[in-house]
Image 1 (tube, rainbow, N blue to C red):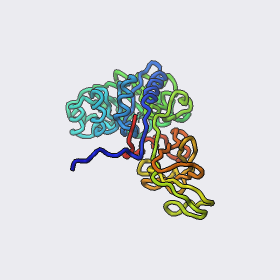
Image 2 (spheres, protein in one colour):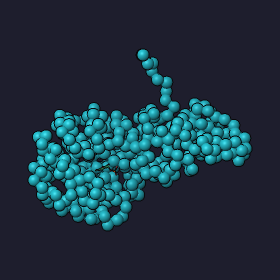
Image 3 (tube, rainbow, N blue to C red):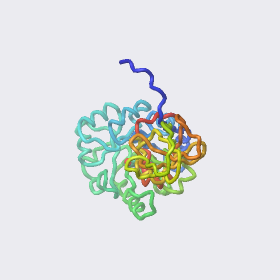
Image 4 (cartoon, rainbow, N blue to C red):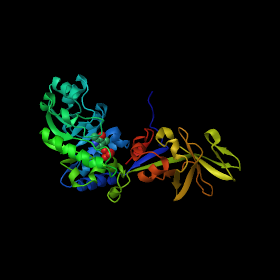
Amino acid sequence: MNIPDLPPATLRLRIDTAALADNWRALDKLSGNARAGAAVKADGYGLGIDHVMPALLGAGARQFFVAHWSEVPGVLAHTDGGSIAVLHGVGNAQEAAFAQATGVLPIINSLYQAQVWLEAGGGPCHLMVDTGINRLGVEPCKLGDPAIRQLQVDTLLSHLASADEDTEQNRAQLHAFREASQQVQPKALSLANSAGIALGADYHFDLTRPGLALYGGIPRETLCDAVQQVAYVEAAVLQVRELGAGDKVGYNAVFAAARPMRAATVSLGYADGILRSWGAEGAMQHDGRRLPIIGRVSMDMIILDCTDTDLSEGDFCNLSYTLPQASRISGLSQYELLTLLGNRFERVS
Ligand SMILES: *Cc1c(COP(=O)(O)O)cnc(C)c1O
């Protein structure tokens, strides 16, 4: 069937690409002598790779990090393979062949991956050393292994576990990373994620890898002035109704009207990433007025208290949404808030 053009979506994610570009420039500047790259995994932290890549490239970013090989084509549509790195590395011959055919650099995370890469013919790659997160990366004591020695390492990386906290672990990882860098002869060194950039010059090395803060997340308070909100959620009112005292609202009737009120049902739900944990304290806004969420969040709808407003069908409401504040309200991390944003949004930038 020849499907006609879709009617306008009732759910929009407005992406402020100028703010995104400003955030990259600010983080690049805060990285001092190091250059900032950009983590664009998980579809640009949920914002949409085709929206974030042009803004990041325009701002000057040249090194991009994804987690999966399946994420590579979306980035290759905007830049060349040599500027893309895959965090999960190569676990088999098919992945290695794909890396070689595209010129994308795998991040080798283990002796096993080093062997896979070498058996496939090798070539330039990055190397992740695990300095204490115990997640992904070669143990420092194995860096002398012949398989590691044979690698053509472009950048030696490690990843901080607790850069968003003031804890001894940061210094310990920094120390372990410096030691590890004596054992390998990479062209460049890279340790800091967004929060790591705020830990200061010791942590910057040659390349930083911000993700969250590019997209408006604030993992440490010192980044507050440098980082702007990028994503804005807007959803249309589907129905408005009058409630009498005692009328119950939504699944399991967890809300009952104490007095006559107006309620609006809005086209946004947990399938879009606004989880039920938003229900207790969350709100949307219209014309500067706060509209509290009442009752349970459903899969495709939430219900708002719009008493004493002239809100009507088709009006768009905004989710009150800066990431640190939304995180407090919902109990979700700023990372979860972004990456949960679903694919029913019309993403506009
Ligand atoms: C996701 C990721 C980043 C980006 O981290 P943020 O905390 O989002 O800035 C950097 N490095 C690695 C290895 C990652 O997995």
